[in-house]
Length: 418
Image: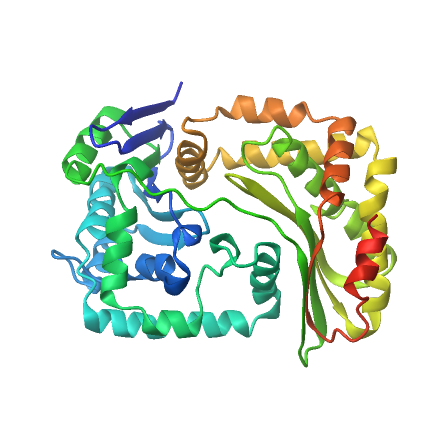
């Protein structure tokens, strides 16, 4: 088996997926904290920390960090989600020690310089402003906040301008000190590498990292509801969703197959009915987001003001019909799409590295690709029908932005789904 996992004495896990026939290595640290680990008064701190770790350490300036990785033709990046933060690099295999040293230095020895923080706050404020000006982006924040009101899981990853603009250096130091500890971090790598050598390097690079347990985040409480904002836009952007399925749920794979079948491609029901047959939208798709203790299923559509009145009833009808007339052929096609996507991702060192890091955080173990493919293949028509019926039992979440005057009232949409 190409995958090996070693746990260091302080609890940090080192996971590798060896691919001897490639010339590169992708590696990074997956940290098991994100937006849902923040307090309300510092919403956005996880994302700002991610930015600031690139802005200089005791040994390297911000320019030196970017210069060192680009001197060897490598790439260095990061992202923040609601449950994870990742710092990762892709380099030629002989430069893996440099990539590991850079990431370890950033995670443990960033200076969080006050002048750099002032500049980076402005950068993030620009990012927040850009998201607010991008309706097909910001609509998902409104959807999330409506689904999980008053909770960390419902808050924006970027945070608000007011809070981010006031975040102090001490807030960042406190967040890192309270959440970046070895038991909550996975060092994951895939490509042309030697596991034992990477473990030795990790011991030197991360051996002094605190073994303090990572604090638990609050449990999620899906609520659902209605959010509408009138804006002078050419299109109305709509997300209609429901209480979904978490990563540990027995219906996790059936949930993914259902989402793909309904709106995951050009052959999906929604694409064919809404775009191809009726021409009501340019873009329509479904998504299935899963968290440790729940999830969200949703449909996104962007449509013109004149088409709004027809769009919503059609989408509701398609949601209702799936449980009644879904065919074995549709289930097989959706499962084949997921299976192919899973196997094609195995050709990429970055995809394998990311998948391994995430699996260790979520499941506590690597999940063999054969197991994933088997579980996708085991999804049948009955499982898809069960998921369709299960989703509709929850209170819908509606989020709409743009010319909303012709959008049906929330109670009317709820009635269509009963």
